[in-house]
Amino acid sequence: MTEIKVAKFGGTSLANSNQFRKVGAVVEADKDRRYVIVSAPGKGHSDENKVTDLLYLCHAHINYSVPFDQVFDIISNRYLEIVNGLKIDLDIRVYLDEIKESISKGVSVDYLVSRGEYLNALIMAKFLNYDFIDAKEVICFDKSGSLDMVRTEEVLSKRLSKHNRAVIPGFYGSTLDGKIKTFSRGGSDITGAIVARVVQAEVYENWTDVSGFLMTDPRIVENPRPIEKITYRELRELSYMGASVLHEEAILPVRNVDIPINIRNTNEPDNPGTMINSVDDRKNDNIITGIAGKRDFTVIAVHKNHMNSEVGFIRKILLILEIHNITIEHVPSGIDTVSIVISNSQLDSKLDLIVEEIEKQCNPDSLNVYRNMALIATVGNNMAHTPGIAAKLFTALGNEGINIRMIDQGSSEINIITGVEDKDFEKAIKAIYNAFVGE
Image (cartoon, rainbow, N blue to C red):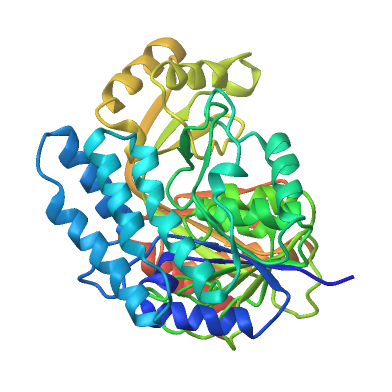
């Protein structure tokens, strides 16, 4: 049986005709890459705009009755450069004129912003000599605007059985009444994962402008080691702290059927990138897989003697937060203490009111608020089977004079989350990385 690879290419991989040629070389290098999913053109350089952003801008101009011609001309020129640069026989102006006329008559924002992927897929199909399949015909949304996976699998499977090789635009599909519906930003990753699931791909390749994941933020640690392999569980822990180049919803369609994801770099096609698997098949001695963190948290620390014997004490606190529509990050606790960790973006101007209500309803012996906190996650499957990990981590922070304000370890034991002051954030990440990797 012939193996199938599904390859999704992001916006930076498709920013101009030169990037298209790189994509063409990647696809032609492996004939198993039979289904290609494309994003809209991204930034070719720092001063350039993403086409999707320009399309959103067009829609804003329409809403405020401002002429959109100048913005649309920028979009048109981007596509004309790609087509002319590739020297392919495709009259892209016909499609551009059709879209512009539709805008003048009034279109939904979903339809308009989906045209970036639509046009890129038309060009890529012509360039590769692959069939073109419009995503609106195979990606199905239900009446509530959510992805209808069952119907999508049925329709897409039937359609792909008729196409040995095809290009499909990412990011959008259609509702039951045929109206265009988009995923959230970055949704082309989801389209690629759905296609990979339906064709039971050997691997889902996600091509972008980075060669996979690094063990930590290169803006903090110079030249951190790349991550060759990572499990979905580890990725989930790290992506919670923002260390991800993947749309989170893109993981689910392929994770459930054990299809690995390979993060690759279009500009470095020989780099193997990072492979994401369900099962940990690594044969190395790395104790940790990665380190990630986020700033700007507030901790509400509550102390009350014999808290553990007071039924419903923590529930009262959580109910107060629920009433104010505030989600929590962590709830580390002891016999007489509980700390509520909340992102500052959740609190807004509600902190004083929340503190007042906790004091009134819970009558604590003391309540302290610690602002300007940062959380750092140290993650690795091997941590659960290696003694002394916590001691090594805390010693590394102690040697740098970093005060640990919070410690939280999940029951899975594949991560340790430490809370430090914002001012110690970067120093703490460096200390942890050097302790485990820089030896």
